[in-house]
Image (cartoon, rainbow, N blue to C red; front, side, top):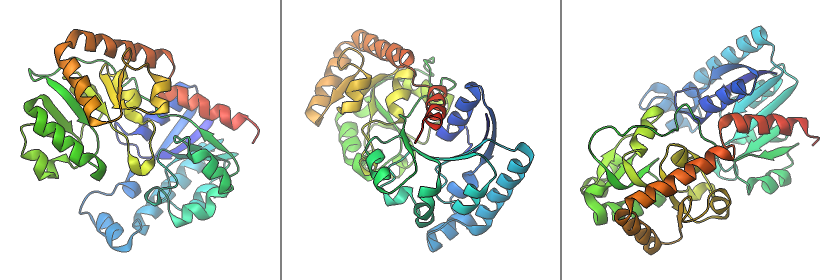
Length: 337
């Protein structure tokens, strides 16, 4: 199949990995990068416009669509696959010549920040909506979509694999991910309690004064190979969920164990399905339970490493790569609606 893939194409992005997953599954793929629309550079004119007008800069949208049109004319795709293109022109996407048009939503489509009025106006026109949130399936059906498919998030072996630790520093507990309001208090509490044994990395954490006032190591965003290198320095790697997305699993669910890290995360039905608690991961419901896990890890680092290795083998064996998800999506297209 010839796939015209529209999505954010920076190294380490989930869209970049899924595009490669389709190629690894045997399809011919041409990618058009939507990053100029989706993530305009901070303080750039398109960024300022998006903050003032509450929509993406029309000249950037037009430029991306011009590239989509050129690629479609030269490539003549069988499938137009759009990765969270809610800020693009839906009519133009759907009119791009191809037999099928699919929209992929990695975030909760009931959350207003993950959709747009124009996207909702055309949602029913897509041949297939793919969601990584199981709870979105009945909600999308109720909204009248033609077909919906649930696929889990994934990991990319190109970036997520056991790696050598860089430097001499080691941490008892760490979290690599975006700073969100529902995570701040818990991370500050951990940093206050465990001090230099805590690593926190990701967008926004350096702007939290309460966290910077602790002895924890606070770093900026980490992507690609560097992610696995950082995981290698941490005994217990936290898998935190996004409450605004009503997450019951996340990309880190697969990325942490695939990178050889010990998965320590929220107890959800999906996490319990994917990994066996205390044998392949550690799950917790409340802070006291988390502290018990961390105390055990500090006392038994060898056993903690064995649990991490068992988790890695389980995730690898069960088929959670982006190429596996690509095959699931193509299979869903073959199924009758």
